[in-house]
Image 1 (cartoon, rainbow, N blue to C red):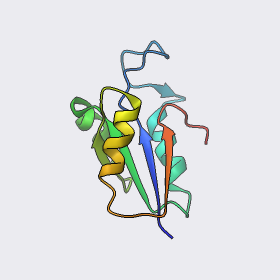
Image 2 (cartoon, one colour):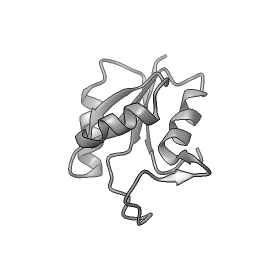
Image 3 (cartoon, rainbow, N blue to C red):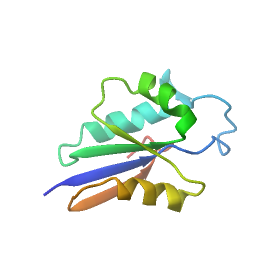
Length: 103
């Protein structure tokens, strides 16, 4: 059985009123989220959905994690669709918001 986690992080931080990477106790929120999913043995692949312009930032923040990236869309639904289209095959897809580190 193969499970893929899609973590959506292509938003603009409007709810948090943030103009920079969202931080929580010195670690970015997205890093806390990815770290949590990377510790789950039943998750085989992690796809982080980001804005194209943010890829260098995420590659720096998430360096060392076994993840892949996908470019987000103009809506959450489009971002999910973009990520699903990159998956060759899997049994289950878990979709989670990158801004919610408490899984």
